Amino acid sequence: MVNEAAARTVDIATALSSLGLVSVIGVVVDVFGLPFKSSRSWCITFTLKDTDFGNGHVWDGLKIKYFKDDASHLPPVRVGDVILLRNITITKFNARPLGVAPDETNIPWAIFRPEPPSSDIPPICGPLSFEPSYSEKSYALSLIDKSSNFKSFRNTSNEKTGPPTMHSVKSVISAPQSDANRKFSLIKDVKEKTFRDLTGEVVKIFSNESEKVTLYLTDYTTNEELHNYTIDTNTAREGDEYAYLPRSKKQWPGPAGRMTLQITLWDPHACFAREHLKEGSIVRLRNVHIKRSRIEGSPLEGAMHCDRHNPDEMNIRLIDAENDERGRELLRRRKEYWESDPRKRKAEETEKTSSRSKRNKNNQRKPVTAKREGGQTTLSSSVAKKYETSKTIQAINPSITCMSLEDILDSGYHENVSPNQIEYRLPFQNVCYRATVRVVDFFPPKLEEFAVPDDSEHELRPDAGVDETHNSHNSGRSIRWQWRFCLLVESVPPPPRGKPRERMKLFVSGADAEYLLKLDAADLRKDDLKLAQLKEKVFHLWGNLEERKKATIEGSSNPQALRPLSSVPFTCCIKEYGVRCSHEKSTDDKIDDGTGCSHETCFGWERRFAMFSTTIHA
Image (cartoon, rainbow, N blue to C red; front, side, top):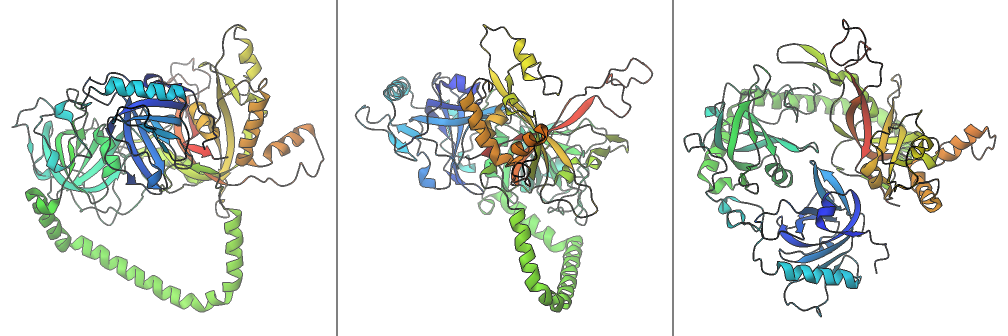
């Protein structure tokens, strides 16, 4: 049986404007292909609506992503089903609402089938057995009745039963471009301010949790107006179209020279790319806008936007290259390139020489290693146990490599040189990271102050306490509360000896805090139950830190209270962003740089970090 109390049931329109836990009932108007296996769990994606079934499109519904380790626990939804989902998390993904059922939590679902139309047929329930309430059943049956007259929820031109393939391509022109201005082209022939169809191989793909996807496409033909990539050095602008990020990641995996076109994809094309494309995919792209960025002298690039006249039209198709004429030509050019490129052979020879050298050095060191082997095993085991991360706290995207706080805070990443050799520094970057950290302090010092009235003008700062803000509200007015607190964290493991250990202020607020705590905010000075629940939750974040902090403030000499900090390291997601600086405004026009700030090195913005997409499963 399902014992968890269900969150409030809301209609789809309310869910689309909400954040946090809700329960919904809706008609399945779209199923995005078959369930697929992600890095660690199975996922099925579908869309729900409860009104406007006949408007011919599904993008105005609520998209749901349901994750489960066992594929048999996924809801076996079909278009036309009515489904009840309890306690799904509404979050924002690419600035759009998304309902998420994480694999670590049993999210109850019940499917009501329109055939046969009888209320005596029980719904299909999972992943655990439960009985929907009378009101839930009644509403589900009413939705079946309302939607039963619609054989399809899309216009005929938009109809699809799964992920698009080349066999389902329809001759629908996505933009008012003439055939002469939007036709198939090799990359070597593309020109600025045109629309072209391309067939190529995906060299790299980057999404970076943003509203777009950056694709690097090659068809092994050369265009002198493209960016010049080299094999021996990494000049790939990994998701960074304006070369803002100078750091190197990996050796460029694609062909050297000017053979690769960077293409920016926007939804719905970006959504398809995230779920279906990978390095090495052979694809056909329709209606690619060939252009340049606003930076003078920049290379050609491509863009694929949503078609306003046909918003569901998908212009990306995976193709079977062996059974496609242009695909076979692409494979032939690829084979010729990798067989003939002397720089690749040189790189391979260098790599083999380096590998042999390393093996020889390792063989020479084997006797020494053998003598120390016993002691080293004990040390490694001890260190591994010390830095073992919490299993209770989990973050999304486990495939993303964690970065140390020292690397994240390194201001050298903000120093840049434009293509015109102009040096400049960015005050902040809108970038997301994963890091393993340990909490060493928190603010405000009292847990009762972790929730504040929902006031856009109230900011987390030492001189603005909860009482001050609370008193500014009328006593007769209903106050909505939201989480707002800050964690001071440090990297785990620490940096090597001789390097300073950095600490980071990590802000946690709003929907991100609800996702972390799985608790709705309330007036913690009055709600003792919610305060007790919060204490249990944050104990998993910082162990006995609160006890030590309280003992220090009160001047206690109790050895139990002052014992070593017991906080366990955990992995979390961190997003970098900027807020307006709090410095005094400049009154001297001569030093005013346009930001109005009196600090010479300030750009008017303050760099900040916040936790997101991290959950305490306790």
